Length: 156
Image 1 (cartoon, rainbow, N blue to C red):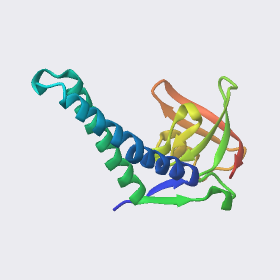
Image 2: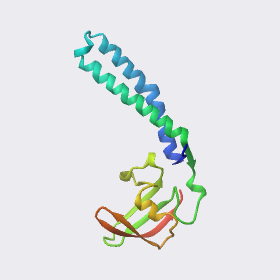
Image 3: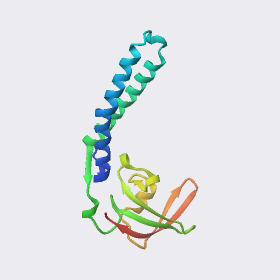
Image 4: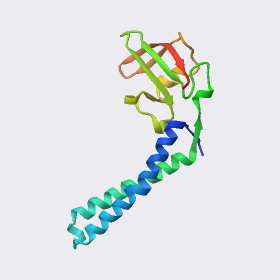
């Protein structure tokens, strides 16, 4: 079974989500289903069907998070240094637009571009791995090739 690299923060967030799903969401939906059953005929009971659908979603998410956590390999980036690797926080400048961006390279389950968390399997992350400050990287994007220069690498 393939290990999933996660940062400590990503592991903590997933663990907290799992606890909330099991201790709050699951009992709440069970109560909602019981209430909806009391309304009688289940074949035309929209509340019941909506609650069952939500229960299915919650149970599926619980299984998904449990699977991720069981395969997780927590990597502490603060113990690393040197070139870009998993956990690195990299500041880049787009060589065409001079726009600066900062990303932390993280595991797939915790990736969120809006929060600056870049999936290690993304084309940009793969291009950055092994590079050093001052290096330029070319990345194929849907809009064509983009060039970035690495301004800084931090391991926090």
